Image 1: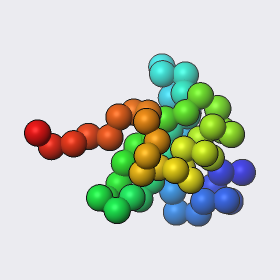
Image 2: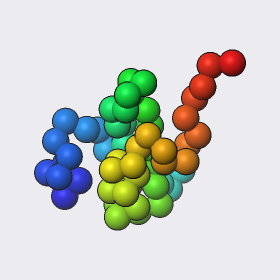
Image 3: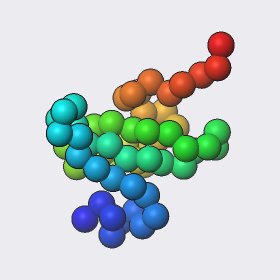
Length: 60
C-alpha cells in the first residue's frame, strides 16, 4: 500500500525497533522518519519536514 501511494520512497519494518521507517526527501535532502504503524507512517511521510521521530539531525 505505501509503495503504491509513494513510489520511489523506501519503507521497511525494523524488527529490533518494532517500528516502521521510511526515507523521505525534504528541502534539506533526505531524512528518516519513524512511526509505530503504517497509518502513522503515512502521516510521517506527508509531514516529513516537521515529523518529530527520529529528531532531524542538525549540524552544531
